[in-house]
Image (tube, one colour):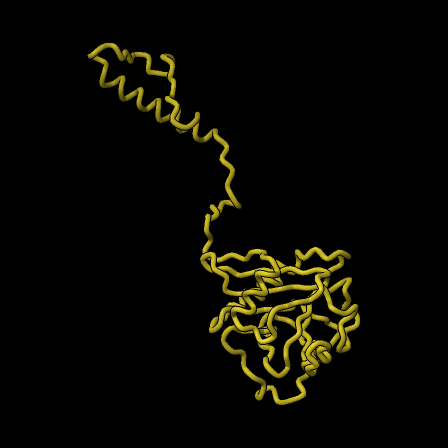
Length: 246
């Protein structure tokens, strides 16, 4: 039965003594006909196959919270707008992905992912290469917020496993933490392993000295012990508003 089409009932479906043309049987016949109509409607409704959308959950046209792919140019604009300390990620594009966390369709955090700059990761992690690892190159949120935390969790749970690395052998993700600016708690509380330490090297364009960086790895490298701090952990700087982790 479709839409608003009237339901057709034959005389055979009505009670035997019902005669809709006689006044003496009008009341009883109307009641019996109504019951038959309702019964047929229920039967037709039960017979219609209605697929349940999204496993029984009806999607919202404009969801309250969502994660979307965005252009790298848009991601860099957000990094600049939110005052990321390192700034936009301007690397040769051998493979890059950018995602934004939206609240009511407005971006509140951004994450960028790149293939490795060098063929292998330094800091004693030479087993991590361009063939099996990618770098979470930027993670930033609106100033004064803590949206980096949920986006980092969504990145490693939903985005990282779906990155189409050319080799098809993606196993690990790395991210560098500035040893002077951040404590690393953002990664530690998300389950990453602090597996190495290194320097970014001197900037060839500006001549600035390289930054000392801790190297965090996901998933954990079980054969390696947790890298130790070279100074008192209590003296490490705390994460501030905006959680500009990279």
